[in-house]
Image (cartoon, rainbow over all chains, first blue to last red; front, side, top):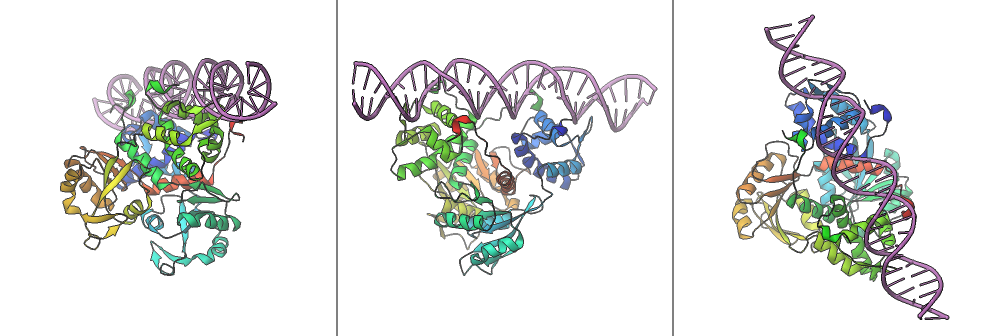
Length: 220
Length: 220
DNA sequence: TTGGGCTTGTGAATGTGAACACAATCACTA
DNA sequence: TAGTGATTGTGTTCACATTCACAAGCCCAA
């Protein structure tokens, strides 16, 4: 096994995430083992890719049989550091914020949104998903009392830099922003921007012109 | 220039999308030219990557000066086939659907959401973004009258396969689904699934552990 | 216990993209 | 017109990722 080398390629980690849901489905369906061939069909990748990816997270399979689903999921979650559950706060309970609170299934992701904030009096105090929306005034205080490690910013574009600055000053160094940045984001915090328009354009481009070419090994 | 070869690498097309917004910002700021160095700093990539990417979409730059912003955007949009504006319908006006209708800025993406459907009587007839929500019963008929080419499905997971089947039967062969598929999606339509939980997990993983290493050329 | 059928794990080959370095080219000035 | 400084465009090299192909190993049945 190659696992001892310690370094997992970035393409592999990206794929490891996408293996988790099919594995969960297989588990619910009662399968206790899965072959690289079967999982490859579900994930639309080459079986040898799967075998090599798994070789990075540990020696898990049984020749002639396949991989144990439970063991596999545990190893993937460990490789993706799902065990240390990161605490996350959300600022801005608009459409995107609500979508995250209501749609994202916890327990499978390795992180928890533990607080949600908004500055709209009509939203403060209401329950969305499993959380009660709090007043954004308390942001700094709550970041420290909850030991927040990452903040998701889903506020109108004009407010984003200000929120990011406040978050950075409160000691958080990672921000995930759904407002197109490029403008004056502060330096004391590492901002990852998600441009919804851009992502949609990419998806549309890929879903309208795509070729499902696969190699020999995957010609199932 | 390499443009004659006709083939643009997939990594390049993915990046081309992300150049558009910074370019738009530069245009609004009054810049008429931009150097690979400057754009690289905005996009956090290596300048030589940018120059090579641009060499695929045509010979656009001027040595000693940089790239013309307007000309550049036109060439990128042409390479990404933004000109033929694809017509898109949305099914399901929940949180995700609303976020798409209200957030995504049209005119920059190369596609248009021209119709939105839901089966909830309270939502039918209401205006979201720029569209009036229509009754999902009319889906097939409207797909044909509007010549829809792609359908975005943002309905509860349980309804997704049924909607996908109806869409496929109505003659659309591309579906973008925000419901985790894996289940019984029909064969007569090409489904691209977006698993919000998975994407969030990926983003959190990357935004919490990332190294901003860059080569010599980018040491601006 | 032997053999047959499967599946993994991985060396080697192939394919692909990024980084570098530099010649070619442009604008501008004197 | 020649010189200077800046920036592009790309040949080359390097690093990485994918695919192939097959030996090693497991299960099961006879």
